[in-house]
Image (cartoon, rainbow over all chains, first blue to last red; front, side, top):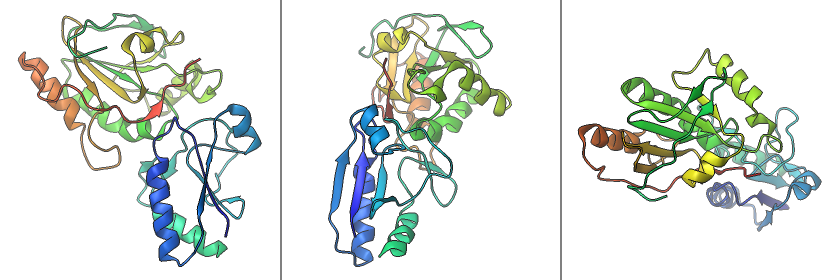
Length: 103
Length: 166
C-alpha cells in the first residue's frame, strides 16, 4: 500500500496524525512507510488537490474524502471526531476503517 | 510584544459596522472562521465572555480574505447570523495592522489587557482545544488582573493555525 501524508507547516497537527497513522498501520499489520509530502505553495496545493493539512492518501486516494468540494489551498483541515468534536486530526478509528478498506 | 508592554489601541468594525476597541480590562482573541483550533476553542471562549460581563471581549479576524474567502467580512457576518448572534463583537482587521501590532501568531491567540492597556497574559485559552476544559489559563489570568495581581502564568504558547498574512 502506498501511504502519503500531505502537510503544511502552518498547521501544527501533522506530527500527531503521523503518530496515529503509524500506530494504525502497525496494528493492522500493514508494512508501509509513510511518505511525507510538504505542500508549500498555493500552486502546489492546487496541483496536489490538497484540501488542507493534514491529508492522508492511501494508494493515491484521500483516505477521508471531503464531503463537498473544498477549495485547494494552504489551510488546516477540519475533521470531526466520532463523538462530534471538532479536531485538527482525523479520528484514529476513521483511519483504521480507511486502511482496512484498502489493504 | 512582551508581558507588561503597552498594547496598541485600535478601533475595528464588527459584523454590523460598529467600531470597537479596548475598554477597561479587555480580552483580545485573534481568531477566524476556518481553523479547527479556533473552532474547537470557540464555545468555551464565548462562555468565558458570558461569565465575565465586567470584561470587554473582542474577537478579531485578521486573515487574508482574498486567499481565504471563508474569512471575509461577509462570511464573518453570516457565521454570527447563523449562530443567532454572539455575546462578543467579531471584528475584521482588514489591514492586518492590529494583528501585526500585537505580534499575533495563530488563531486563536489570546491577550489579556489591563485597564491601562498593558499586556498581562498572552497565549492559549487552556491546554487542549479537544479536552473537556473551560479556558482555565485565561480565567486564571483574568481573575488575577481583576484582583489587581499579576497572573501566575502570564504566558503560554499559542496553539493553532498560522495567521494568513497578505
